[in-house]
Image (cartoon, rainbow, N blue to C red; front, side):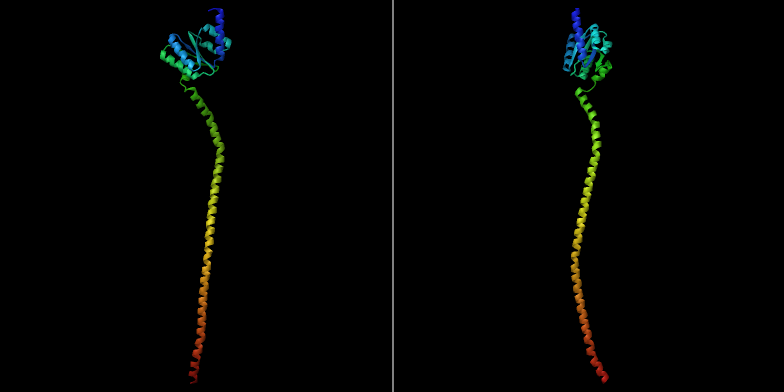
Length: 235
């Protein structure tokens, strides 16, 4: 490879290292060309590009791009999966792990994710995660759950106050209904008093009539007896 070509490769690698959100390094030794093409196609579906690189040129590019974390992974035949900004690092990790398990040849070394070095074990754990969309929804749920609880705590006193007001209104309504029934019952009772008065009046009149008849009988009784007595005395 000519010097100009090497410089072009280093510049391209450096640019990829700067723009890549994450990258995963693997040892591709033993893979066939067909297996490599299959792996490239799987990675492209998830927003990643697989590049076979020379370690000497990659070290220069990493130094130029400020990606020193990559240097420790450049041992032996190296393939790098560059995950683009819109790519899915979880799906990329899964594709590499599945290929390593299926071929028993590919070996994942580790990588760099959002400026942090990750090991081969980290890549395996990453591959076990649910799809990115599921992880995002779970993350949203984790963020929203405390807010929902806080909203519930804030609105609980208002709900309790409304409940107390409703209960008090219902209580007052029942009391007013009871008072109305009592007033109605009280209004109906006095209507019987005139009957009692009338009955009392009639009884008084009957009593007065009886008294008058008694008085009349008393007045008549002495009159009939006195002449008889007088006659007897005279005789």
